[in-house]
Amino acid sequence: MGIIAKQSIYNVVSIGLAFLIGAVNMVYLYPTYPGKEFQGLIVALLANSNLIQPFISFGVQHTLIKYFSEAQSKEERDRLLWFVLLLPLVIIALILPFYFQFNTALLELIAGKGNGVSRFPFLILAIAISTAYFEVFFSWLRVHLKTVFGNFLKEVYPRVLVFLLLMAYILEWIDLDGFINFLIIGYYLRLLCVMCYSFFIYIPSFNFHLPSNWTSLLRFSALIFLSGAAASFILDIDKSMIFAITKDENVAFYAVALYIAAVIEAPGRAMFQITSPMVAQAINSNDLNRLEELLKKSSINLMVVSGLAFLIVNLNLLDFYKLINQPGYASAFSVVIIISLGKFFSMSMGCLNNIISNSKYYPYVFWFSVSSAVLAVLLNYYLISAYGIMGAAFATLIVILFINSCKLILIYYAFNIHPYNRKSLSIIGSIFLIYGMVYSIPSIGSPILAILLRSLAILILFLVPFYLFKWSSEIAAVLKRFSRYK
Image (cartoon, rainbow, N blue to C red; front, side, top):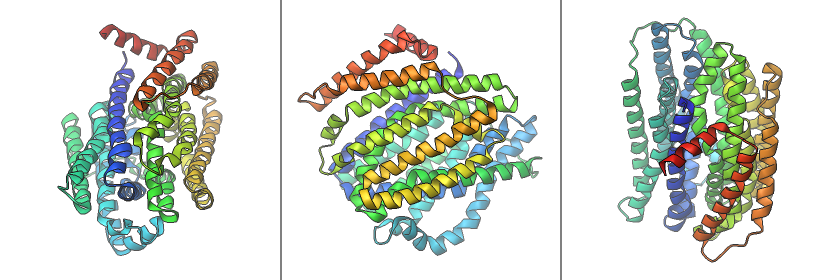
């Protein structure tokens, strides 16, 4: 089994565990104990932190992945590593005075007045800084093809941290301020862990010289920063605008729906962490055959796994919301279905985003992202005002379709490749067929039992076309390997 398959499997397990713990937090602990207003506030705070984070990292985590394989000598690689570590410090020094001078006005502009977010400017900035540097060190591990521990810290650790803090809050050991203070401390402990592991894997020799191609690095970082800022804006502006335009509790309802739908993209998050450096290497060596192979294989594998997740999630929604059993949350039922469609489309593109960001066509991402961000603001403003959280869901779906279609067209004209083939059509057709067959199965008394039985039926029905059409030899090999352990 290759390194992609091995580390992807470990990463999928980590992400699966993370989603399980996160589900306990999002759909049970938050709604049952602190309540939807508390949940909405924390989600909004983290969303605003994610909006600021790209301004601090300045895209250097992507710069490291793109240029590391280009560096021909150890000295150049060491200079690159120090460059991506020190540049965010310069950015932090520049934005700190501005942030502390104008943070209240900035947060009120993003999240609205009188909603509680502006009470915690330090949390938003502190977590943004720790997250930015975590991403830098995680990219450090990715270029050395060591993603498992970093992925655990990225996906599992924050969910465990929130779980422990929620339990402490429920037991009345801490209050809201204590929750926030310990959340900040926890994020910096995570940063310390990834720093120590990164330096254990590789310690660069320090010198006072910039990389020879530092102007190219800075230009690429600036464009990726602008694109990343716009992308983060797209991801989190819906929650911020819901918080600003409607009731606080709607953020909680919407966040839970997003969390359920996010299960569909979990396989992609695992795979991209290891394929990104390999895509960069294929582009730098001008190996177009390898590039097309990576694109098509990643597309098929993600369509298979994400398609199965799409069916399990959406065909069990009624019972999922019965498990939450809190007033108001089921109002976001349709949000899950709408967002799921967008997530599945994104996963069907395979490693296409990695190809663009590591090629000479990366400036186009900036224009795609900026136009999508403008579209997201306009759509969210009008649709949330008119339709509430359903409007936010439709806005998100439209933006996903727009930006991904732009990327597909770019890749086709730039490299004359695309991620799809006949297997793609058979996967989509099978998903629709299985959805229609299982949708009519009625629920039984116990939601947990109903979810288990319906999921088992979906899995059995899904395996038939999987083996009949021979969708993925890689996944088939993994299934065969696991069957031997039983």
